[in-house]
Length: 441
Image 1 (cartoon, helix red, strand yellow):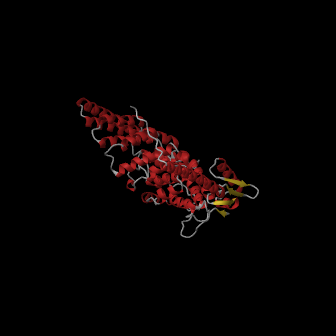
Image 2 (image 1 turned 90 degrees about the vertical axis):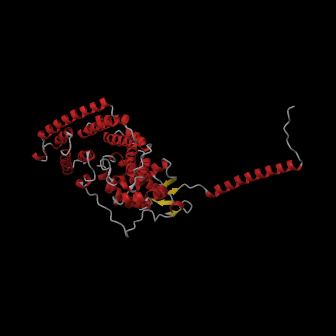
Image 3 (image 1 turned 180 degrees about the vertical axis):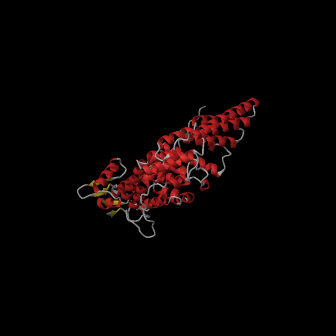
């Protein structure tokens, strides 16, 4: 493997490509199954239930995990007022957890009865407020209705009532409160265009100065960009989240998610200098990465060109990431982009690369590696050619000698033109030849 000194400028910090440094490094974690109890403890409210149900529906037929997730969802739902969701969970359990987790008709009837009474009370109060034309009371009335519908699982009605408070907001804080409610419901409904719209509205408010509110808005914006597959924008938003967020937004996202989403999106979309400046040297984001050591290690491995270790971390995390309600649709795309960037970065500083050694570094076969490199060369992402017989990749670098001669000739032509122009001007001045504009009489 021959080093290309001219191409190695930005890569001087890297160690030998694909090498493993065993000293002072954490061992690779095994692909352990998701600890559902610890995972669900990171969240609260509706998102906790929906994440548990998502795991139950996407655990790949693992009956133990499925039933554990359904059991916890059942217990969590009974703390609230959503009887429709309760019936759905009971149907999914289908008696597999015994009589304790069966249909509780008495509970459903009691909750539905209380809900009807509360709805009637809220309607009477709101009607009274509207009659008296007290803006603050009307705003609170619609807000209470939004909270009521949200608790009952009627997200569309909750969103409508939260939005109706807009006409009765009298301060900047009221506007921010309305936006945060609309964002919360929109995320639950999967309406991320609404999320972006209300994030922008809240950020334009001059009273949006609370660091926790700002952090929440960046998280919501990051989720919206992630859903739209704008990974670089998503990474920037998650990387800018202030550590003061803590657990204050766990009805939507946990700080561990900020580290995972931001780290993977950055790896897939940032170049080497951005990765160093905005991720590795980012003191604020480092606080989040400490919560997920595997993501921290794989980012450091990628930057240090320890690709085998990096890809091993990614492989160990994949099963659990596929059970994440926001990330699951993007895992394969992000992993593919990260692997392509690793292949490109590996080949960049060398004139020639032994494909056998490169295949060992990426834990793949030589034939499989050839196909990956062919695709990158065809897509013009790697400037190289492959010697299939000798299994060597040769970089296609420009002829520096010829390029230098061409540049010298060009500079000579420019110098000759400039000298001729100066001589002409000097002669004109010497012979006092001045062009005078004719005056009109």
